[in-house]
Image 1 (spheres, protein in one colour):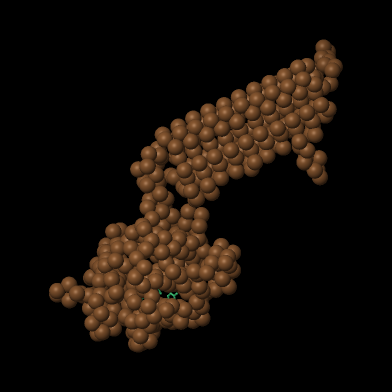
Image 2 (image 1 turned 180 degrees about the vertical axis):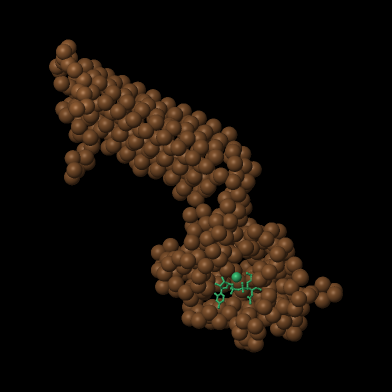
Length: 469
Ligand code: UD1
Ligand code: CA
């Protein structure tokens, strides 16, 4: 659930700096790391959305490697956004240096929050807690890591006050045993942060300008430092390679699935559920294993979705069952329908109530009226089909002449016999009965039997089956 944005007008404007300049070498990809998707959206998009939900006045994305690709992405995905700025860090000299690149665009009275483009699961609630606890001082988000290797460690005094953060490479063996780690997320008043960043040096094992050095500088200036511990390590984990990307994808999906279950959606297995978009569900909706939801999907009460079915930008009415291995894309389905297994609804398909679409039926840019059925092996494209129509097995609308698409119109209550080709443009009257195996190239009148197939059927009594020579 999104926390309330900060509405207190006396509060300093929030400026979020998102670090995204690193190369991401271990992804072994031409795509900048932060554009790799979690749940179908770039990692950076998740972080931007979280920042926005906190009521950020402005987000500053620090880019370096892949800067041009990122600039182009921001220009399309966030065209015209006035609360988004890019800062270029030409050389990656360390996290303090990265933040410094954004500082010229941040006013003195701002509160700065530093996030990471490759830490996509960070939660608004956690950040809100950090901002609250930090007041007008310095705030650091920490976590407890069972294996803290590689992280900066939080060094505290006997009384528990944070003294400094020491990086893995600079840590003593005793410090390396500290399990409390720095997540990298930090908040500070802009005016102070600016002066501290100017003082950070690179006299350390990595010859980098460490953002973590502001902790020492703050305690020297007697600025209050507070920490908040993230509830789970999972939420603050960064993504460096495709293994970690997949792990964070699962974590994100699990989080979504559990939230939906708590809202009453029946999900058979949270580990085999993928939502890449938004899902709105009525009561007692059931999703079997391996369902993939993309774009905006709306499911009415008592909708059942079978195993390994893909739903993309669809709206499905109450009581409809979609059986396994079906793919529904940009379609509107009425109530009480039966779809699949192995059905494919392509864009601009509209099914009225009580429609049946069976196995290996493909429908494109067509409407089927109430109670109509196409139960097996059919292709219906550019067709307007009335209600109570029966489309037999193997029926094909020949909608394409190699250049143009043509419509097929079928009236209410028509019966289209198996293996019929409807050569469009063609109209079948209401109540018409088309004999099996017909090639219909002309309009068929209402309420009549129309038949169009080779008349003669011959059998040769003396015929011998051919033999191998
Ligand atoms: C940093 C922290 C460490 C913390 C860890 C959490 C410092 C000095 N250390 O270490 O305490 O436990 O994160 O993951 O801050 N980046 C830039 N420009 C740079 C350098 C880094 O944009 O010049 C970005 C990277 O793209 C990356 C992030 O900052 O997303 C962290 O940088 P990284 O070099 O991985 O820092 P760590 O050594 O992991
Ligand atoms: Ca790192």
